Image (cartoon, rainbow, N blue to C red):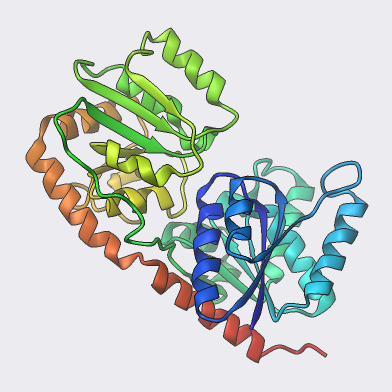
Length: 360
């Protein structure tokens, strides 16, 4: 079976690292994978190291110009896959269009409701482009919350949306060590607005800082702004920025993990933190609801306010018995989010698409 994976970016990110693990697992199952991507990043090298064809599409003058579109069409036609699996906004739209033109079955994966609604939700053109994704033969969301948000907005999708929960290699993360060092509050994620690092830094500034540190693992366009915020709050001695292409090795240096995002699908970083045996603090919606975490059972869920996050941080720092219980329960819970399970679910969809193909 030949599967083409089309993704907008191979920069550092959850969807991007997920693709690396997925194609490696599919390869071991005998699937012939190819990858097409638009924006380069460190994950392209990881895929090529697996001896998998990995092609970047460029425009002549700019991204998405006529030369780009022609090159993408020609490359997909040359690969001639049994099905196309696309991820992220632009790839989902273009993958769906070219799948229809070439009569190739396709699957679009929606990681966030905003991947469909877009940043400029009032734009008629953007709204029209969003709906092209819905022409896909199969639609998948990676979390129940995204599934619900989309159905609430587009009720006609109710019988078409599938849920395949993200999965990780449960043995790929180094277990956390709890040596006698400063208490380290850690987070992993790109420095972009919806990841909400600003709130975490401001909440951290309210804590007593004796033997407590904040480690921010990631990179992105807001890095300078966040560093300026740290400086303005006189936190340079206590906040560490860590730039890496392999965040997994840093979970062992944390004592707890915080996910302060304004919006999140099913966070790979959260799953990895739980796999590492860390107690976790996550942002939720009203009534402290969260897709994965049950408040005070598998982790702490906070409302998106600085005061609520400060309370959660103080609780986790001061109560070792609570930390140990949450870490233990979280580690048990994450066993349900394996890469094996996720890969099998995608493989079954590929088989169904290929078997039902109307290609000439």
